[in-house]
Length: 375
Image (cartoon, rainbow, N blue to C red; front, side):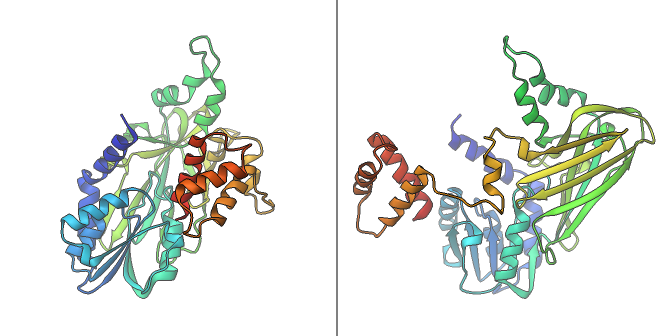
């Protein structure tokens, strides 16, 4: 399987999710009026852009930072919609539009609602591009959580790494596995309490992409607590909802499972406290669980391998300095006047940085990377 196969399969999984796709289609048909100007954030294959055109939009700005936008352009032309569609390949934070829009639509909804960066991108685009009386699709996001008992999943995904494998100790990986949230399918018989509404976000009013909430659960049965599971209910537009809750799982989304570092036995009536926060526009999650006088502090910031210095680079008090590779990129950018060819840039890079660029292949890869990012 190649990365292109993965790309096709990923987009296929979304388009064949009939509940997701048809829900958004109905929402756009209900919201978009003739001559409206639409902004599609993270357009992907362009399906929401094309639905907006079908609903009568005068013009659609389709923003996407990934390669999939080239496919969207081809599908757009094939369906004769190119006269009403303007594609912009860039992260939305860097984009400027020549006019205000009537409707802002996005489906950058992650497994736990916020983890694909929907909140930060919508706040930014809403404040810069949306008319005062404009509509946002989706309107709101609610997050729910519940303590769960998942012995089989926990053994497979977390404790697998605690045992020797092939005569080797892989236990360092366990810490990473325990500090990530995992997509999962759930049935209600795994619940150790009633679900709790964690928070509700109105996208017309949200001010920050950072969120925090504290909730309590009371055990409804005896069992072993392996972690906390979460899902979303999205109001796409008035009266139209989309959810990945256990009773309404679509083909595209699973639920989110936040594991405890170790399982804890609980009884009916036991109090379980949870404090959870998301920072970095949904990219980082921290969760603290208190149960039976035990306290767990976990974070996705500890969920991937990194050097000791890496987290400190992003602190507000850090004073960054260019690395040798950063100096090479800066040098390349200084030559981007439109006069030198790719071949000439490669030669200049090798001449200026012989300690870093030791082969033609390295020079070619370095130049191509900077050209793709910055031109």
